[in-house]
Picture 1 (cartoon, rainbow, N blue to C red):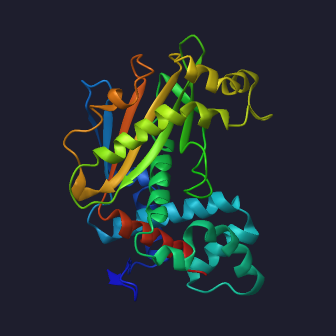
Picture 2: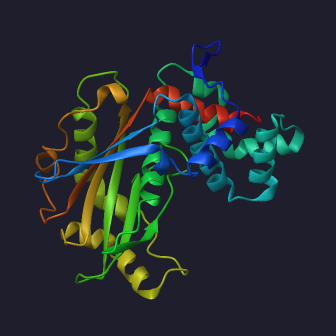
Length: 305
């Protein structure tokens, strides 16, 4: 592992090497983690996901997967943008002229070079944490009781307004035939200690702003099925009425040295509505050096720029 002139850790694994390793293990972040259910006797059960082993190759593979997923999503996978970024990145060449201007327009909002190197720049780590949540949830094994109907990727920038994450499920049973969970993502970058403060902030934010977040959403899309569009249009109503179809979740990304032995056991004290079984859910994603890993993702995104 190397360090740049600003003292930021950077990877010695090239994009091609990272892609090769990622492909070998399955091509998904979910293939590089260990999951463990926790707090099953609590009002809010949670899952611990330990990812990014001390293997440099596995860490680089995960960073590459996230960088590639982000750029593919932000550019819509289009050849003039994603295609040119990918080709230049894997060949180790620099984009120039209008190609650089175009690709940089998609990378810059989160990964701009100067901002990414500022001390205490928490936006980068927070954004990568949101993508970890999204990819880990997207690539879960199929649930026989329900299927994911809507799962949107993270917002274009980590500080954009509104909720951090929303999942709509099509249920095999239930009054609505659907359910949803509104998520808030946090990060904790301490090397040790208690991430309870970050978790608590997530619950209080959902408690005070959840209805507003849902009210900010589009009331459906023409591409949605009629029953899905009807359900999505009433999310705020279901939330305010505390219907069993509505749920809340908080995810926190943190350093592996700060994995809590107990977490989310006080969730119901900070989020006091929605008391039906299964209403609350927690997630802890533990990473060896969250800030450093976020910079590795940024390095792969910015290689061609």
